[in-house]
Length: 382
Image 1 (tube, one colour):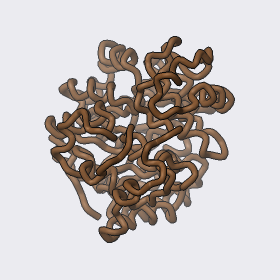
Image 2 (cartoon, rainbow, N blue to C red; image 1 turned 60 degrees about the vertical axis):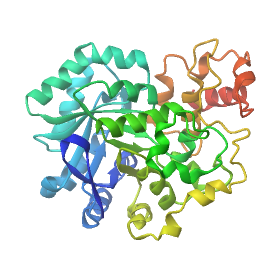
Image 3 (cartoon, helix red, strand yellow; image 1 turned 90 degrees about the horizontal axis):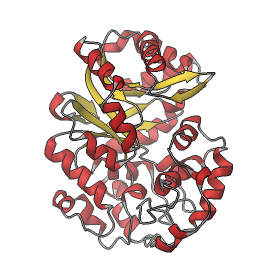
Image 4 (cartoon, rainbow, N blue to C red; image 1 turned 180 degrees about the vertical axis):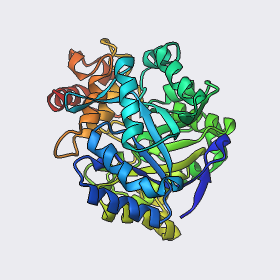
């Protein structure tokens, strides 16, 4: 296992990390088996945003005797209400949920206290000018947390976070499908550091390129979530490129982005983690995503949403790109994960607000059937 530093914190973490999202419903024995396996393979970085009590309790027991070996991320704003996950900024819910996290994981001090899931500018501004951030900072002052981080899927919010002095880490969704927005002429360029200084480079969303470069220049580490696009990239049929990638290729893509320190892999069992850890011993040919994407049959993205945002502005103020992203992540599961449903429903305006005017489709460079997607999203997230 290779290790990378988390920016100015100086903390070294494994480049492949464990995301605990899929541990809900797992027994203590299953949880401990996975965590023990990860530790034996050199993984020392763990993120737990899940609010479900048994997930937290099981992780706490599993790491009790090896706490000093783990760097842990926990989240402010992820709560458990009426037997389900709810993201909230209500402090009478935020505070007991965080205290529950610390108690169930049996922690006296948390390495990174993450401001949970901030995808809209208004939400970010309210957090940074209210009781929420004051509470988070008080925990750091009191030694309850060592560092402050934030999780977001929005490059706009992430860029705003880079301007906040005491945010030392950003958890961000990265994969080829989320990054690229046009034809890929020479994808080899994307692994060259200087490329990210060119905001107009075709194929990479300029705002995301700016984020990567800004984080590198300011030494603010990015840690990856959604590196597999919810499994979408593993299928020829579902991939926006028309060709599947392997876990190893997805991981290589993420770890080759500027400022990326680690990728959190959400897995259900040891077998899925083995597929990820295979990256550490993979050959150059096995890691090569570039030649796959360059020769992909759908590298022009015709009919595929790339979340580029050219469909904006929406007459009803819907963040169409974000709705499409959540829809894509959700539709490949047998049951819609409550976290993704909540993320969609918590948007100020979402698919339920669509009036099917079609103006977005006139602006879409890839001829995506956006109105049809909105209808399907309504059905999925109702």
